[in-house]
Image (cartoon, rainbow, N blue to C red; front, side, top):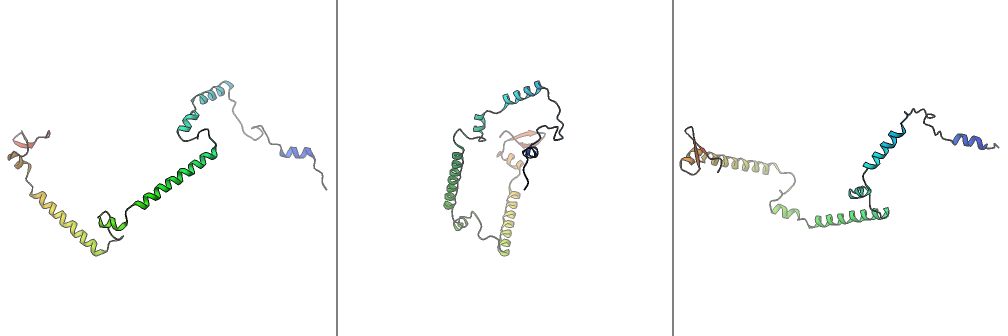
Length: 159
């Protein structure tokens, strides 16, 4: 049997503490600038209360209570959402109120009928727009206020 030598065990478990031993070259930092830099950072850091206000940290109570409170809040929100989903109107009532269309995909015949109806509406609106009186005739009939500019009647933009 082999015996353990306490010195060899300590040598193998010993970790190098010097950065130079690890092959890292550190530039020397003057003592005054490092302490000033640290002091400035400590003076400008956010306070604990600001972190609590931003919900980054929690209050002074136990962390396990925070987890339970978050779980409770999540369950309550889920219950509210489930209640709202149950209270929403049925699909059939939305179809009957013309809020949504029935069926998912429209069959080609109903699509053609809808397209034809749209074209008829567009034609009717186009005819109505063409049949309306011109601005000059409305101004001549004193329906629109006019201002005379170089012999042409124009509508008054202030009205």
